[in-house]
Image (cartoon, rainbow, N blue to C red; front, side):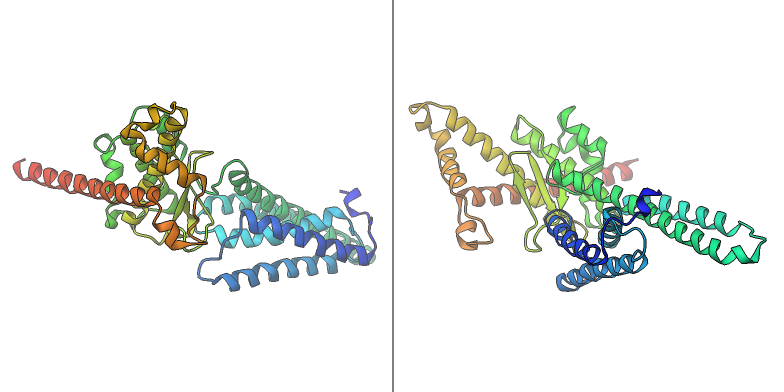
Length: 360
């Protein structure tokens, strides 16, 4: 702690370091973790983020203008700023993570302050100076505790993006189901029934993601995919519900839309992206076949998919071109039929269950 109190920078450099590292951190943060605070527009959220960075940096510079002008203090101030914004932005989708970041820091700070206030100083001449030093120490300890909690939260969220594409994933039991017994609608009916809008409205974001992971597991079985489909959620453009990443076998959904969109629409997105995974496996088979075999009728679609994937048209650049691609038309058609099948099976189950209750 003593080394952290040393000054290794002049006042001008201390301010400059805050500005430089705040900008570097902003680039990292916007690319990995930035999302709008619930109820705030994009512009308002950006203003809030910049405001928190400026306020925490200014407060740190003011408190540390005489002591602790060093890299440690710069890091702590910025961690508190970005961590504080992250807590606001993710409190509705990762409340357990936010609580985990704040609870230990708050508990430690309360205990430390109580211990300091309990110290009795008999000599009045020493009381003022000693109290000032104790207060300074407490502020440093609280800063460290808060920054540690913020760092842990940022690392957990950032790791999900660095080692995949999602900041939120289903529970472990749902992911494990991918590699165990093949799932279908019949043996997953308890979960499939949660796709009813009345049930869906009662689910948390994490629970909804669990249901959609089950749907992806079912699609994997029906499409005969040789690999898993990993459902996750990330901060996507508001116009994008989701996408498929064949490199990681991930179906990434829009984190904001999961809490706002109806079940059937998200289910349709999962089925749509699952079909893209199927199309990629057809292309693999096509590319592995010799020239004669590629002429088979079964490979007609695969050849077209291979061409389109090789020069894929992104919807953000050319929506009409994106929409008219055969791989997209076929994925939409499959998804529409698949969603109808899910809800037909739900209605059949409910009717049969009602008849059984009457007969019983």
